[in-house]
Amino acid sequence: MDEARMNKPARAFGAARQWTRGHRAELRLAVRVTVSALLAYALSLLLHVPQVLWTVLTATIMSQLSLGRSVKATLDYFAGTLGGALFSGFVAATVPHGGQAGYLVILAVGVPPVALLAALWPRFASAPFTAVMVLLAPTIIHATPLESAVFRVIEVLLGGLVALFVSFFVLPSRAQALSVEHAAAMLRRMAGVLRQLLAGCAGPLDLARVSDIQKGLGPALARLEIFIDEARRERLARGEGHALAPLLPVLLRLRHDLVIIGRAVLEPLPGGLRETLSGRIDRVSAEGGGFLEASAGALAGGPAASLDAFEAALAAYDEDIAAYRAEGHMRALGVDDLERLFALGFALEQLHQDFKALRGWIEAFGAVGWRRGSG
Image (cartoon, rainbow, N blue to C red; front, side, top):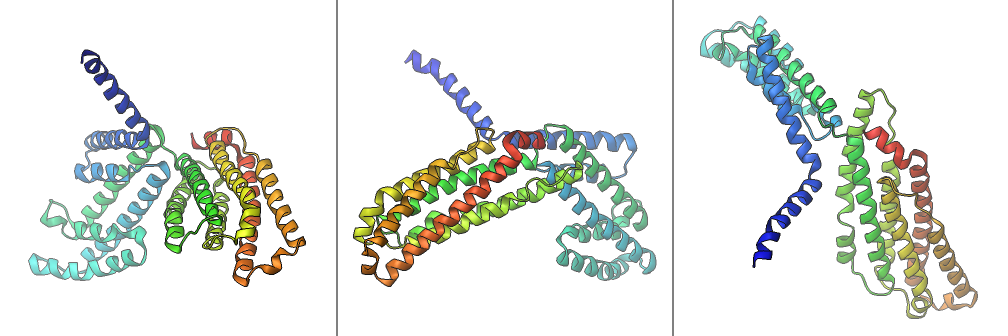
């Protein structure tokens, strides 16, 4: 009993440490948002900004998970604010208004164009909000619409600059590093998918099961594409080239290879052919999955992945197929069986080519280069 009580704090500490390790990016974001809010508030007081609230809100909203996302959010928010402020200021200066009816008129004139602008180009999403704030400024603060437009732009500019400063220098989290981590996780997931699909050569896999095996790959690729776009913005902001661009097409081709394999294994191979190729396919599955996992490790800074074992397994598979054909057994197969066999062979060869492309890409940039570019 006493020993269990003594171990309880240790277990709690271990669980907290493990949770912290798994949520480092989120914890860094919490610190950055807090620093942004405090710094924006202090600067607003120091510079006598009329509406401190908007500066602090802008700084906290623009502090995103990664530097690349902060850059995009700040540029988009500032573009929308500037567009909304300019147009609403022009409307307020040229359209006569006074009293409640007058404000209804300038709202009816000033809001629709910026709302349409935001609908057509999402980066101007903040324009309608800014326009309303500027047009109704006299009902909230002692300032004309033109003064409100100028103040609004200054507040957003100051808040955005604070967010970018904090994103650069306070526990920075680079989208490039997040992209590499996500790509490594995708490769590990693909390794599991490949093994599960090739198991279908020995036993039936219906369409629902194949779809279930592959269902996470599409959303994961979409998230990776977002990370890569954010990384591009980061590297542009730092005056560097875009090192991640070749990664996404390679992973897209690998996913397509898995889709073709999934179609080829909806039905198991015919009995005689299955017995002949069973060991070879198992080896191809094991070595292919192993290469993908080793590639994920290489992205994380581990040793380079070797293709030798997979190529040897694939060569042995091709030799058995050639021997089976030479012995005349192919003539006994039905059209559907032949189509599946050829589709599987084509998919494995494409997989081989895309494995080589992946290996070449990793070798060209290297895990050391990734860490240097992401730090």
